[in-house]
Image (tube, helix red, strand yellow):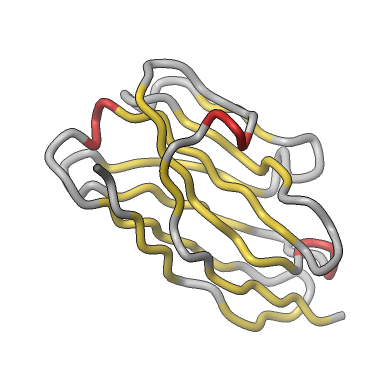
Length: 124
């Protein structure tokens, strides 16, 4: 069982930056691939970024490539999402997910555990 708690969301102006954190419980964090997803009002949850269990592989949605960076610190059981050059269309609730496995995973249905989400609002 893994419990995930996101933090770091907030209100920021367009062009600004935020860093989201997702703290995981449990001793086997390094056995899990991790991902960030987001959901805007009236829209489905969409993939943002994913990282492999060792942190050596990452994958990004085209909409955030070059602006967002996913990373993890297995010693701290934490995964991060550094978001730069934020745009109003990045406004959403951001969720982190976890699933066992060595790869990067982009399908939300493949994740077994989810956090409660953190709101990111980007004003124009």
